[in-house]
Length: 80
Image (cartoon, rainbow, N blue to C red):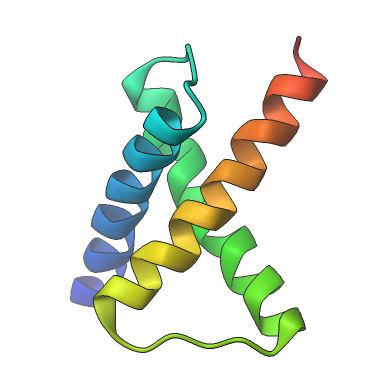
């Protein structure tokens, strides 16, 4: 249980960093990591609603990066 949470945070951190690079976010690394963790949740919801599923850690990172990009986009629009 604790290991799963730690893995989710690490994947969220990687995803947040990647999404920050992709979106050319001017926010801090820590903020992008937090948005990546939130983006993992958002990406999971979006892909689940679309009926798309990925297996393994690489698939989880892809879903999280997409979700983090969505979250960064929304945050940029809200706080511009």
